[in-house]
Image: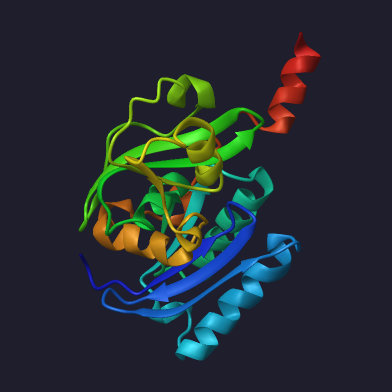
Length: 232
C-alpha cells in the first residue's frame, strides 16, 4: 500500500459516489442513488468533499475513476470530469479502475472467490472473477460481457461471494439452494468511490496521465451499433 491522497469518483451506475482517502483513512465519502444525471450531481459532490476536507486539487496525488463497464453516459461523465481535473492541475495523476474490480474490493474482507456481476441488458451481464485473501484482490479472468446462463447455469460453485447490481437476482435464480454461494451485504453490492481509492492504493501501477485515461465499455455503444446497422 502507498500513502497516496486519492479522490475517487464513480458514475458508472445509478449511484453517484465520491470519496477521498489518504492511504490510512477514509477522509470523506458520499454515495447517492439518484434519478438526476451524474453531470448534475458529481462535480458539486467533489467540491463539497474538497471543501469539507480542507483540500484543493493541488493537495491530491490522484483522481481515480470507474472507467467501465457500466452506463455509457455515466462513464463518459466521470472520465471526462477526471480528465478535466488533471488537465487543470498538471501535477495530478489519474487512474481508470474497472468497475467490476472495484466492486470486488467492496468485499475485500471475504476470503475466497468473488464474482462481480452487473446487468448489461436482459439476460446479459458484465462479469469479473476474482479471488481475495482478505488483504488484496487478484484477478482470475478478464472482464467480459456474456449471457448469464453461459456462466451460471451449471451451478458448480462453492465458497463464492456475488456482488454487483444483479447479485441477489443471480443468487435467487441459480443458487437458491446452494449455501456455498452468498451475496454481499446490500451496501456492498453497489459502486462505492472508496473502493476505487482502495484499488489504486494497492495497485499504484494504475497511475497514468490524463491523455492515457480511457473508457472500457466491453460492448459496442449505441452509436456504434447504429452505424453497423446502417452499413449492412
